[in-house]
Length: 226
Image 1 (tube, rainbow, N blue to C red):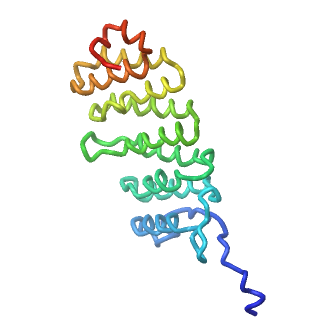
Image 2: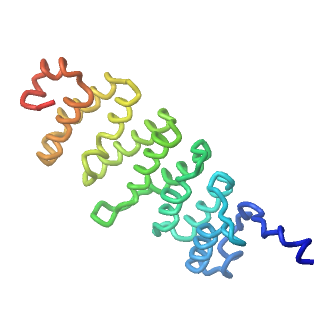
């Protein structure tokens, strides 16, 4: 028997089907179900001494798992953290669409302003994955536009969040669009910004958007070293 079976190992059957509700996992206890689902996602594929590459996962099914967990506990951050920093490392970046969609949904959820209101960072992570992992610049700009609008609406996000659309537009080669966005921010909102944020915006404009010659001729860039 040993000679016949010594090469056989446990095989991972693939991403498990998504339950219809929390009741299927923990008899209606949403918090217990959330934790069971999280542990399932975190550890699935690791069995029999083997580790399954992230590229072998069904990312459409993962997206449905994360949607289920979000319904169980929309305030918790374990699921988006797992989506962004674990499954976001797949060897096939083009599979990341469901993950980015989930992060964008979580990141744009309304919440009261304040230092503890940090769901927007998952939207920022979605921009990062779309831009640098998927290389999908139109998607990155669409998400960046949402982040910039959210930053203006809330008023308590860092300056890079306000400037995100302009940064992505600049990276796409849409210099005029980036320039217009940044100049509009400085013209219409500078009085409501911290001086350090105004300076950071000017520096980005003069160092990253303008060429050296354009910066030398632009009044707004006077005193900004390149």
